[in-house]
Amino acid sequence: MAFATTHRSTLALSRQVNKNALKSLSSTRQLSSSDDKKHATPTSFATKCASLYHPSAGANRGLAPPIYFGSTFLLDDADHGARLHGKKEAAYTDQDGFVYSRWGSPTNEACAKQIAALEGVDERGGTLLFGSGMSGITSALMSALKAGDHAVFPYTVYGGTHEFIKEFAIHWGIEVDFIDAAGQRGPEAYKAALRENTKVVYCETPANPTCRITDLKGVGRVVDEVYGTREENPNRPWVMVDGTFATPYHQRALDIPGVDVSIQSCTKYLGGHSDILAGAVSSKSPEFCYGIAKVQKLITAPLNPMDSYLLMRGIRTLDVRMQRHGENALQVAKMLDEHPLVAATFYPGLESHPDNTGGDDCLVAQAFRSGRDSPEDASIMPQTYGGMIAFVVAGEGDVALERAKKVCEGLRVVNLAVSLGSVESLVEHPASMTHAMIPREDRLAGGLDDGLIRISVGIERASDLVEDLKQSLDRVMEEERAERAA
Image (cartoon, rainbow, N blue to C red; front, side, top):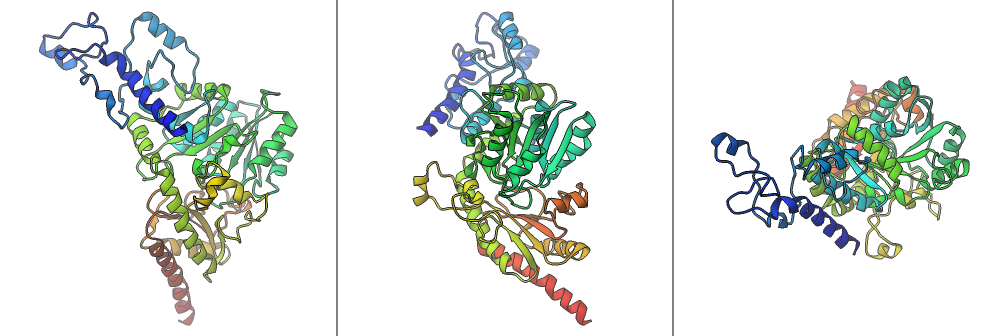
């Protein structure tokens, strides 16, 4: 029933946008105006060229949602324009429709509502889409922080987020603390860093690239203990969660008490094909949605219509892709965990993962719901643990760093490229690539060793991926033996 309701709402949006433009069109004059009296049928060649024409009535019955490229929208009258310009910013438009695409557009809104459904956002809140994951992250932070405010971040945070903090936020007068957010001790580490002027508590889980888990229930609880709930204290810090590694297939952060904001880099799993840049920020709070919509309108920008459409198309296969990613990743992780050149493997599905402790308080079990809507689904839906693996090549310092580079460069099926979450497998070396901008001391404090390699396992045949990684690791060992023998 939930799916049917969401599907109908998307179609309703399409029909609402087209209704006025289509209802009064004749077979001889299909101009953009919905009022026959408003625009005369053009007779001159130049005016015919410049006029806007629409398809016949019924075009809005196509199964796939249409792509609306228009930057501006026709107004009924001056009062209609006045109403639209006087409205308070929000995630979605209302019955008055759209005015200008920098403030929102139909294809973007249809996709945003689809992601909101995945995130469990009710009618009070919403989802806003941005031109990249970083645009979503920075918009969320700019909407909540000003000079004199304080924010808490984990050491192990996406490199772009760390760069924004260091290169911009602190120069704007924002105070920042970094803490070790991983595992059962994470909530207390956050609690110890909280201050009277704390306005953002930022989490990233599973962490990029170490795959460590943050106890989101514990973080929400300690923030409630210190400041009260959102209902009791509207000025409490915003608890934000970057859940890109997990996606809503595994982790629905907004279902957790005390969590206010869910962030997704839709470039990754939600898009799923390495062909768009996109980001999503979702919240059940209308106040937060107002603030970030204001930032989007004036500083950043909504996701463009074409990429909004491609993102919707990618999401339609998210469920089946995530299952295959997880099945393949477990086989790859098991091989890595046994290889002599690998000092440590971080994959939530392995018993050796530090957060896979078993029992009711197991953070891995809490973080990976595998698309299930209820506990009863466990009997028919297999447990998986995502497609992201991190492993550390044996050695110290430059030795490990050079070995890791050679392993990445020796792969023939897995692609050496940044990003993640696509149908094809990708590998990268964070110390020299995505996290190179982080000082080594900070990087090591967050568990990002010199020899750490990150793999985004795709949906290829699992045995092909296992064999490719094994041959590259074996080759590095053989070359080192040959060098010693020489």
